[in-house]
Image (cartoon, rainbow, N blue to C red; front, side, top):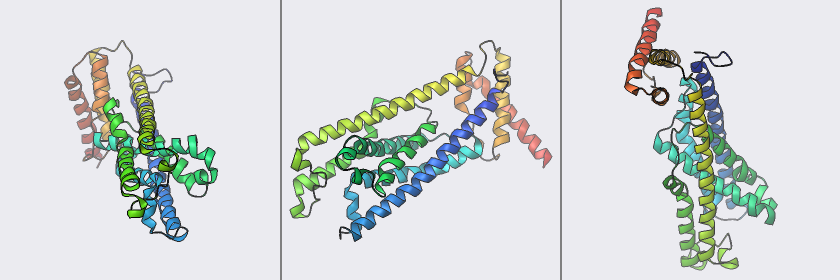
Length: 305
C-alpha cells in the first residue's frame, strides 16, 4: 500500500530510522569527545590551579556524571553504528537502562546548574569547560537517548534505578564529609552542605530533585515511544486483508536482506508484532512470509555475485 504522500511505509520506516540513527550517532560521538575534554580540563585545573591531586576533581558530582555519560556513550556507540548501517537502532535492555541512568545522572547536573548555580555563581556555572560539562554534554546525551528506539516504556522501578548514581554519590559524600571529615582525611565540604544546612535536609531534597528529573526523562521517552508506535500503526490501512498483511511482511523481509550483510540481518520483530496486533493475527503467521522475502532477496544477491 501507499501512504498519503505516495511513499511506501517500508520506505518511510527506513528513512525515519536511518535519520534517527545518524542523529544519535553524532550525539554519542560528541558526548565522548566533549565529556573527555571536560574531564581532562577538570583534572588539569585541580592539579595546576588548586595544587591538588588531579583525581580529587572526581569529588565533584559534575565530573562523576560526565564520566558515567562518556562510559554509557561508549557502550551505545557500536549499536549506533549498526543502526546507521542496518537502518535500525535498537539497544539491548540493559544498555538502554544504562543509557537512561546516564541521561538522568548528567541531566541532574544541568538542572541544578540552571536552577541554582547560574544565579549564585555564573562563572562557575558557565565559565570555560564548565559550559561543556554543565550544559552541552547533558543536552547531547539527552538528544541521543530520545532518538534511540528502546522498545520499552520506563516504569517507576526504572525511574528509581535512574537515580542510582545520584544516591551512591550522596552516600559517599555524606560519609566523607559528615562522618569522616576533612580533618581526618575525608573530603572537603565543597557544596557547603554542613555550613548552610544539614545532610538530613540536603540529601532528601537532592534525591527528590533527581527523581523529578528521572520521572521527566521517563515520561518524555514514554510519550515519544507511544507516538512512534501510533505513527507506525497509522502507516497501514485499516482495510488490509490477511493476505495483504503477509505481503507487507514479505516486503519487510526483502528490505531486511537488502540493507544488511547476510550474517548480520536483524529480524524487525517489533514491526511484525505491531502488524500482527493491528490486524488480529499471530506474529508467527507473519514470520513465514518475512523469511520467504528474506531468502528470496538473499538468493537473488548470490545469483548476482
